Length: 68
Picture: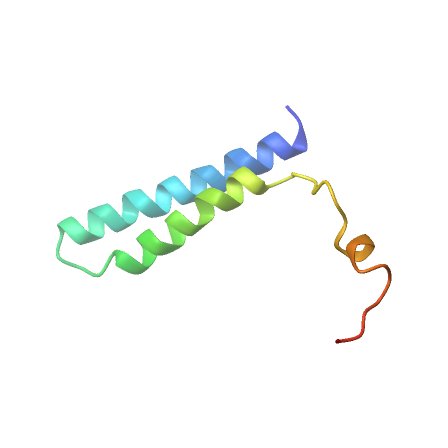
């Protein structure tokens, strides 16, 4: 299994655990919404882990790092 796949699986596992914990806390009458927000925010991160962008940001500016 490649490193990228392991990273994606780990981030997904953490996100699912946070969502499950937030659901359990909410059912017991505690504040679980912050954990649900964090868990939901990690799901797109798991999808993007290890992806390489097609275009480098530095090449689009042609080396110009100054503000216009």
